[in-house]
Image 1 (spheres, rainbow, N blue to C red):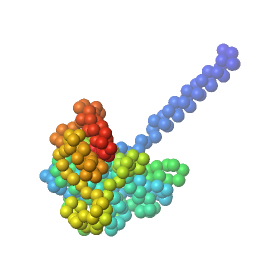
Image 2 (tube, helix red, strand yellow):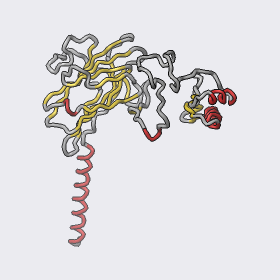
Image 3 (cartoon, helix red, strand yellow):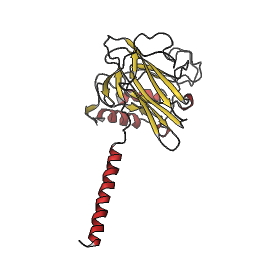
Image 4 (cartoon, rainbow, N blue to C red):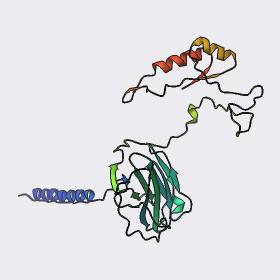
Length: 282
């Protein structure tokens, strides 16, 4: 065999070995742990309160620590023995985000969470993302390694608390699954979509009832009425009212199918209201 062919064959063989080794290295890289809905491994009837503990170690300082968390139905999270909650919430449909960077320290840290379920399925979901200089990250998540207790002794939020007898939590559902489905982040105020800010308490103490307090000339007020016809709205307009709100019947929905909405009735109301020069909201 010519030398050139031998050299080419050796080069091809070495290339295959290198590529194979690289692929094995990439495939063996550990994936970050997945966060899941967790709850007490035993069963109880709501209302119920469950306490959770997650220990983690920092080998060096972090530049960022962001906690994403929600619970069904509410939660209070304590970090490193803080007297006040570092995070709390009561809307299971919203995954809230909290900055915990300044509350961490090198060595062992403790994330302790008290969660209450007032009815139906109970669940806790959280992910603490730790970012180091250079971009490397570490995550602490809700999974089967988190411990729980229903009746902990005093001091359960302390790092030195002995939780060896605490059982491990049960995984209930993956994130985005179970009875909770897809969740959303905290709603962000968008000032570009603000039309007008209405202050019905203008000119009076905030402690006074906006419906029954004495009124001065020019004060704004709310009128609750079933007016729906153009002639009725003309009367309201002539009396100085400037905003007309259309309400749903609270018993049905405009969603005719998944992500398919029918706003025909609301559009008709909007056109009628705006034809009189009134502001409209729904």
